[in-house]
Length: 272
Image (cartoon, rainbow, N blue to C red; front, side):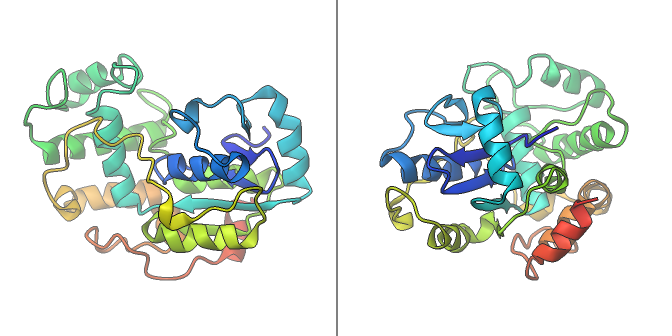
């Protein structure tokens, strides 16, 4: 299986396991900048050079040797499951993607037909009942994860623990897992632990939110989207994420973690 979703700087200063919807565009650009002294011109996910990625065949052996030998500092970043799934809905389901089309072709029409979801019209700009549609999307998400129907789960809403575990199961070890909600603190700790060809001044780094502006703006506070049933569904899907990364399941309105991440616990529970 190897190390899907793993990126590494060309200098091999640092290794990162990508978790979708968790500041991955910004982290990728910081890694690129730390090697080259400039940002990648475009969406870092489109870069096919200047960085090693598991999706690039020539990078796979280098990444494998590095990770299995734990030659470099390895890290990843997580996000509150409530805000992450909401962000996936507004970006991927309601939004028009950077190619000018809907995400995954016929996915949205299928959701409209089978789950009664609305997405704000052709351009995603019209008003619609965001709460009702989001809750129906949650049913679809649960169906994909629990029964792999009507399709396999998508990387943007499959559990973070699933992404993070592949790295451990195949012989990797994390030195740091930090929260998107405390991004500067966590990313600074990573930068302090490694030596990069170019120094990175985190305060001067722009945020590369590639999904921003794709879809309609969230019209309500986070907690308004989650009633008792929605919370139950979210817990069914993301139980490990809440437990391992110390997020507050009881209060969808609290995006901040309520404990410290225990790396030994993460490795033990996701390494099976």
